[in-house]
Amino acid sequence: MTRKRRIALAGILFALPSILGLLTFTILPMLSSLLLSFTDYRIVNTPKFIGFDNYTRLFDGTDQYFYNSLAVTFKYVILRVPLGLMFSFIVAFLLNMEFIRGKSIFRTIFYLPVIVPAVASSMIWIWLFSPDLGLFNSFLEALNLPTLNWLYSEETVVPSIVLMSLWGMGSTIIIFLAGLQGVPRSLYEAAIVDGAGAMRKFLHITIPMMTPIIFFNLIMGSIGAFQVFTEALIMTQGGPNNASLFYNYYIYREAFLFGEMGHASAIAWILFIIILIVTAIFFRTSKSWVFYESEV
Image (cartoon, rainbow, N blue to C red; front, side, top):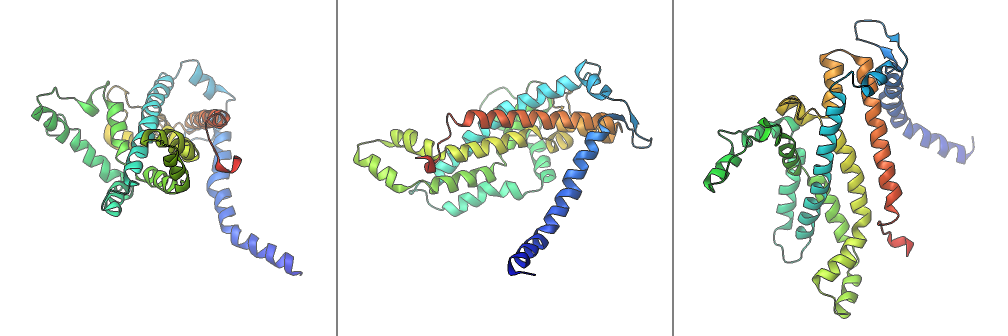
């Protein structure tokens, strides 16, 4: 065996665990769910091929919760993604300022919620959102402002969960912070020589140089927002009156509470297609606003 082949074989052997894991735990389950989406499968019964009936049942309105879950999920995505990006960018920008003392402490504080178990953080926020004993309503009462029902109102449940999600933006903040620290100082120095103020430097140097990072966080944030699940499972169970019936919780309910695995598989593949389309749109439009330094 030649040295070149030995190196190739060694590379394959090192990559084999990851390849097998991808095939076993990702590719094969995806293919299985695709096949099940064309069947009537209720776990205890043998799958029965029914063609596109599961998909027809969704789009013709037979399943009354499908369009509701789509609307709730898109509402969450529309609120969560822009607010999450703006909040993370502002915090990262402030943490990157030279006059800020104790940066490492603040970075730890903002990242800490990421490593807190989702169940534990959800229980904390349930107390914070409590209409009677919650900290938020106590604060509003102290300011003589009207209190809210937060998780217990159809109008405020989704915004409340969006507010909770901002608490866990530590990873996005760290990514933005790394990008800000990678902006060449020479650009700022040249701008100062030209007489540019802080706002012009921010708009014409910081933002353009950060667009690849903004684009990455936009993609990852959107994909994550479409898959929101834990908050609905622990905090609201889809209520009140299905006002927080997020798409992923809808899949979980159909599959594991109602036992309709075939129907749930069809719902899951529609979500996959939606995320694929949204991601493709972002990539298609990115050419007009994402700036790469290597393209200069």
